[in-house]
Amino acid sequence: MRSDKQRVAVWDTLIRLFHWGLVAAVTISFYTTKTEGTPFLFPIEVHAQAGYLIISLLVFRVIWGFVGSVYARFGTFLYSPKETATYTKALVARRASSYASHNPLGGWMVVIMLLSLSFQAISGLFLSDDIFFQGPFNELVGRDVSRELSRLHALNSDLLLILIGLHVAALTAHKLLGERLVTAMVTGVKYFKQSPADLQTSTTGKHRLQALAALLVAAGITGWLWFY
Image 1 (cartoon, rainbow, N blue to C red):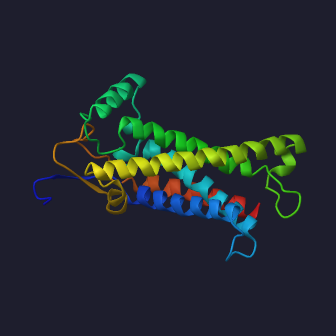
Image 2 (cartoon, one colour; image 1 turned 60 degrees about the horizontal axis):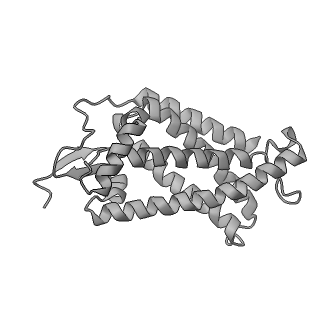
Image 3 (cartoon, helix red, strand yellow; image 1 turned 120 degrees about the vertical axis):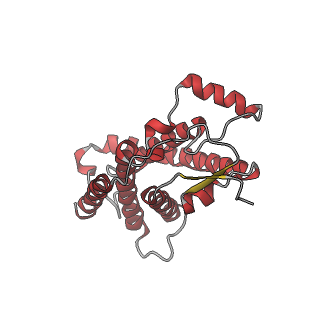
């Protein structure tokens, strides 16, 4: 029964849309490179378009990490190395506190994944296969630079798979411990037996103007890359 649990509204609508949009874009991106691309006629073009969408989503997430709702802000879930180490020791001993936003380890995993995705999407803008695809900025760099970026692009793809695997493993572990993180990313709500360590006593408002500005910037980047 949840009647005896504390209900905390954690993830706002835009964060949830960002998360599932990113999941869809990354899935399509991997699919169009690891398979023949069916049902897409030109999978490499779909791959590039998914990359443009990822860039826009990441730009939005960075903006929202500074001006968005309180639990979405980087300042809420990024902790010092000392605090992260303390949390890790408590986690190993199974005495770790619950967090409404990302816990200290999860927060840094988010940053690492965002950085890896950023490199993957941005480096793709400079690549070319010399046959079917040429990134919009490929002509700005020489062939040697483009080939080196292509090599790093492939390596980072493998890193991303590892990070995604770790993310799924963490979600599974939390579910076994009774914390349904996937459900929370759908509903935006978490339930706690005790108050989470990062419980915010005040909200930061609706952020309608910030949301509009962030969405316009992200949409503008998508359109610019799409028609560049």
